[in-house]
Image (cartoon, rainbow, N blue to C red; front, side, top):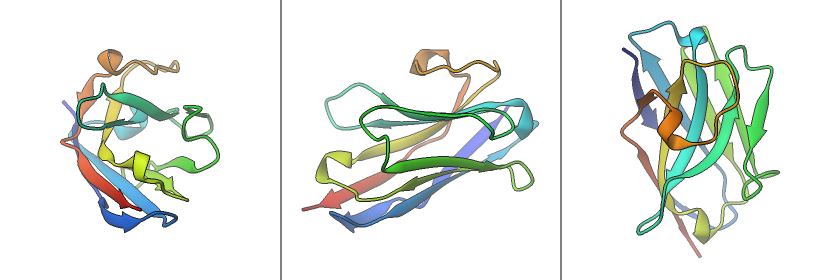
Length: 124
């Protein structure tokens, strides 16, 4: 059983940057691929980024490509999401998730463990 705790969210202005962190415990972190998702009010949970177990492979949704970077530190058991040039439409609760399979997965229902979420609000 893996526990995930996100941090780093908050209220920022359009154009600002923010780095979210997701700390994992209770399992072998390097055994899991990791993903970031977000969910805005009234909308479905949206895939943002995926990183493989070693960190050598990454994949991004078109909606954030070029503005977002996912990375991980397998010593600190933490995955990060660096977000730049934030827009009001980036406002959402951001979730990290862990997946036991090594392949790229973008569907929320296929992830095994989830954090509680971190609110990001971008003002115009």
